[in-house]
Length: 531
Image (cartoon, rainbow, N blue to C red; front, side, top):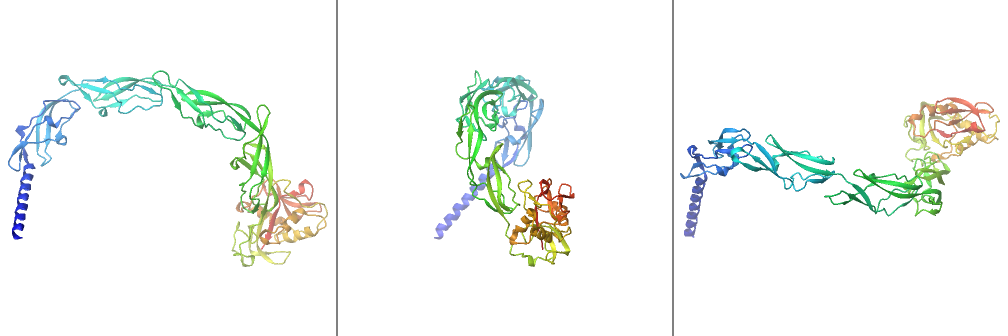
């Protein structure tokens, strides 16, 4: 066992000695200046090939060998013609040796071989390597040599300009050129027309099946072009009749015709799935089924294919803040509002949150535009309180809900007759008592009755506001989330005379007396609560 161990140690020692000797054979001690030999002439702008340089070196092992020079160890200015000193600085110890050479100036640049491709389509990019292009330079007594293209600056190709173009090659301050030809398309033609050429009003253009061929002329093969909607003009889905469409591509045009069948009637086969709403909810047309009947250029009629998509329908008449039954919604196809259908929805009051019952709301708990205990929007607050003359209770807030839309079919008349209703007042806190007097009168009072019948939030104490209460809503209208109309006037519960009542215009804030009945008696109705 000891004998084997001794043998292993001896072998390892021999290996270490051999390695150390090998390392010394690779380590340079110094370069020999008097042995340096290099080319006497070099081309301007060209590097020196290290293989053309010979220099001897003494190595650490005591032996003399030829030193292998790398490109990074060679220093001289290839751009400056004339005699120069070429320095070689060894990477091992930064020792420097040198030799003399002469940089021969470049005096001519030529295109020895043009690129294989010199014919281009307008808009086409050239290969930056210009396959096939060979550029050569001439250096006096050293003759000519090929110049790498990546050392040249090549300019002059304008891909979007048709015609003959001269391409310039620059190298070392000299220039040479070659010519190319950029061709514009000579024309386009239709290979296949679109599959769809008959449209119903409102349908979008469909280019499926359309195939277009671009014609380039001699030297460039024709090719099929990609066409998108931006390339086609002349289509208007709302204009019935024959339409002449134009395809424009690369400055060339071609035409084809389509026909738009005009809508003559709509048929509501099924209203939307949802027709019952809570105040504030947005209208949902999901499930509505409407078909159209269309007329062509020959006055023949036919029913449209399938139902009109919901995203192609428009509507009006829906007011999410107007509570009531049978609110009429008018629906038409986008861009054709003269032909329409109607359906009806119901809007119920929003449920009142059980977390804030009226008995728990204290002065200062709510601010303007908060939701009141009846589901309306708070528009008035009095920290000192005010007297509800109908109940004798002290109240601090007024909340409101808009009950009618700004049209004569939705607004309500103040009174059907002209009889005097004694006892109404104008102050804040008198609106509910005014409403009770109006409803109890033998003449019908639709405006007050609408408010008294309203049960928003499960409350039965809504009323038509007095003159001063209505004015507070006007004063705070910008801060209250109600859709208040500036054109129609709003009715109050305050009588002005036996034939007139106080109203207020929300475009100016002006309060005047107007006839109770007839056209002037119809006003916008806001239901109010005091709590």
